[in-house]
Length: 118
Image 1 (cartoon, helix red, strand yellow):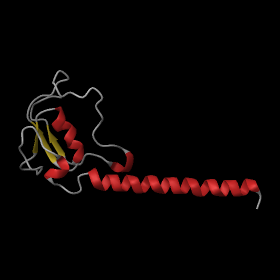
Image 2: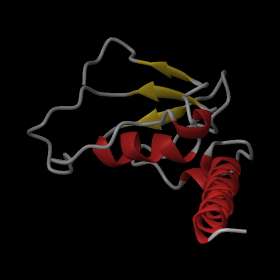
Image 3: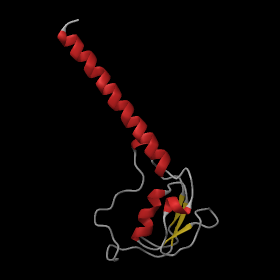
Image 4: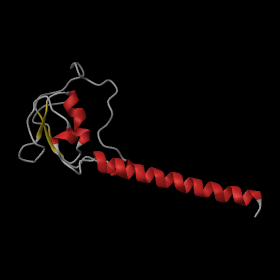
């Protein structure tokens, strides 16, 4: 086998291994933070302290930190208890969108704005 063919063959398997690693890490991350298991530990605490994430008793979002905690359980239900502004003390200058396109980390719960704005 020529050196060129051997090099191409080795590169092929290297890239296959990298792709498989990305898929496995993506799957494990998805299962760990996508909200498949609903518990208070997975979501963290909310400033308002109310709700259990169910439709009848959604988690209450009162500040930017609470809103950031939504990413910890993408299938729960939430209600915004007051308007959020960039002037609020816990506003994140570098806000990261909730959910992602890689491995379908999309938000599948509900978010009731309750007449408030963000």
